[in-house]
Length: 314
Image 1 (cartoon, rainbow, N blue to C red):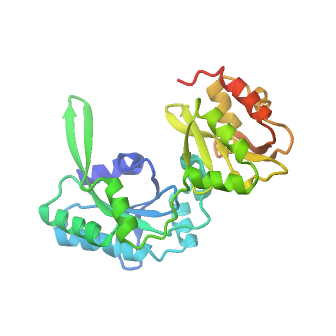
Image 2 (image 1 turned 180 degrees about the horizontal axis):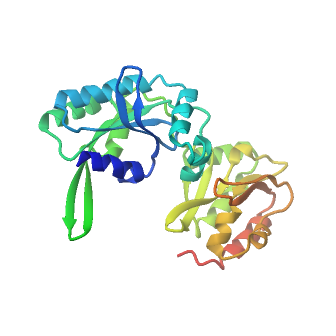
Image 3 (image 1 turned 135 degrees about the horizontal axis):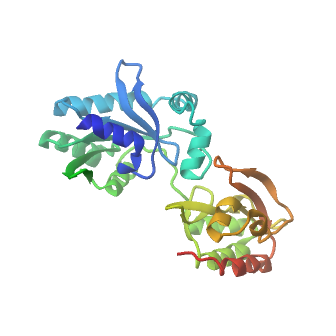
């Protein structure tokens, strides 16, 4: 059963979390062990996914912590080497990361790490150990159990976390030694826009686009996304740190994805954005054209919003 679970997770790690990309399987450590699955998240941090198999409660926890003691010191170069070996034939870590998260691979990798123990069931002893490590010391560790069902020729699995993931993250931030920088708040990004002389443009753009696109913050930007091909895709980002009073409010648009959503040809949709001061004109790993540019006036923003009104967003 757990061998099958490992194969399912390698093929679709979203069974545990949408915020993970598999970058290794049966990864050899310097201590002689093999990590079942090694993943990276959108922040560039690593996650060990270890299956319980037939280990005793003491052994499964000790093994997971042993692996964590090894990966905590992996350099960014070592992470890239592991990932590129595993991803061979699928692209580089940079390209695969960009395709998965629609953000560039962070410059700093493996600032923090976490452990997910996967099992078909969990015993009281392991449960007590994991809760103790999380509650008392802020260790980012959790257990995921899967229940299996079959109806005729269809198979189903249900997922249960020992500790709610949000609670684990909270314990790690408040009691652990995490070095991860959190995403900026909207207030912090607005302050950056104010410092760079584009606060009015920033507020006007956010107010205008919020009617059409959902948004979230990153460590430096606000990303706007929508449903494309059955998944959430970032199509537009605001970059206050790259903005200035002379050039205006900096943005990045994936015109290929937005054109697909709008049902327009790329050349027509690209004309919705200011033509002056465009730069970084390239394509994402799937070949979708994108570019950066600047909004200098509210009228330019209003012109874009006028076009967005005609798109069917549902």
